[in-house]
Image (cartoon, rainbow, N blue to C red; front, side, top):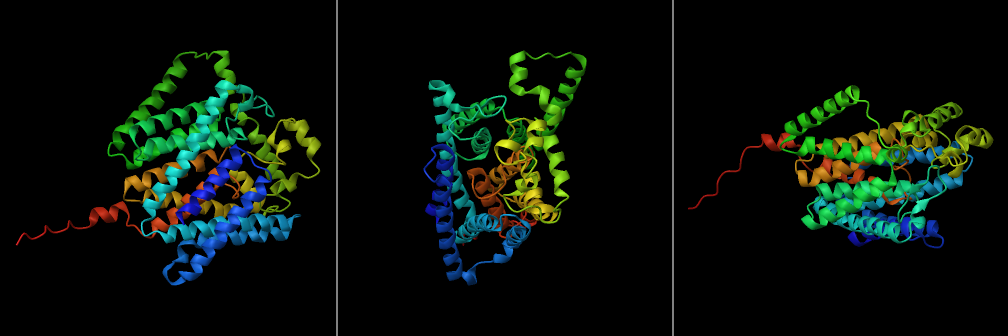
Length: 411
C-alpha cells in the first residue's frame, strides 16, 4: 500500500517536471489503478473500516457529480470526478490500512519531500547553467518556473519543502539543505501568495505547538508594530529592481485577480447553485474572449488557461456553485481543526503547517483543485489523514486531564 502511495505522488511530480508523452492519460491510468486496488482492499476489509469518518468527502464527490447535470461537458466532468474519487478512495484505504497512520505520514512526507527537493535542486542547477529554460515567457512579467512546467507549481513545491525542513524530524544537515533549496526557489518564483502563506503557516504552527508560544506571539506583534512605525516615520524607497521583482504596483489588485474574480461573480449568476461543472467553470466565459483580452491582456491566465481564475476558492465556486464551495470550505476548516487537536506535536505540527500553507496560498493560486497536480493531491491526502486522526486520537486537553499511570511495583 505504501509503495502505491509513493508511486502516485512520484508519477504526478514527474508529470509536472520531466514531462512525458500523453502525460494526462498516464496520470489517469495510475490513479485508476491505485483507486481500483484500494476499492478492492476496502471491500475485503469492510468490517474493519469506519467510512463514517469520511462522509464529507463522499458528499463533496456527490455534489461534484451533480454539476455534470448543468455542465455543457457532462462526460468530461464525470471523468474528472471519477479521477478525484480514485484519489479519495485510495487515501481512505491508505489511512485505514496502517495501525499507526502517523508513521505512514512520515514515510509519505519523506518520499514527497525527497522528490520536491530533487526537483527544486534541479531547477537551481538548470537556472545557473541555462537560465532561459527555467523562465516562463508566456506571462508578463516573466516568471521563474525552475524544473516545473508552471511558476505556480514550483512555488507550491518550494513552500511545502520549506515546511518539511522546519517541522519534520530529519537529519539537521538534510533540513538545512532542503530549507536553503526551498527558500531559493520560493524567492526566485516571485510568488507573493506562497511566500506569505509559508510565513503565516510557520508562525501559526509555532504559536500553537511551541512551548514558547507566548514569547513568539509577543515577538511577532512587536515586529509588526515596529514595521508599521518605521514605515510611517520614514519614507522607505526600495531599489527599482526590488520593486519590479515584488511587483508592488500590482498589489492593490493582486496582479489583476480581484478584477477577474469580480467578472467571475458576475457570470456566476447564470448558475449559482451548482456552477458550470467540475474543472470546466471556464465555460461561464464562453463568448467573452475578446472582452477578456481587452480587459486583462493576452498573457492573463483567463486567456491562456481557459478562464482559470488564479484562486482555488473562486475556481471551486465557478465549478460547483454555492453548494460545492460550502462543502469544499467545510472540508478545509475541519481538516485544520483536526490538525490543531493532535496531541503529538511531531505528528500534528507538520500536517497543520502544510494544510495552512495550501489553504492560504489557495487564495491567490488554484492549488486545492482536481487530482491532476502533486500539491492538490497532497492536500487531499492530508485532509483525509486528518479525518482519520481526528477520531483516533484524544485532544491535547483530554490527554492533559488523564491521571498519571501508577508506578510499577518492584515486589
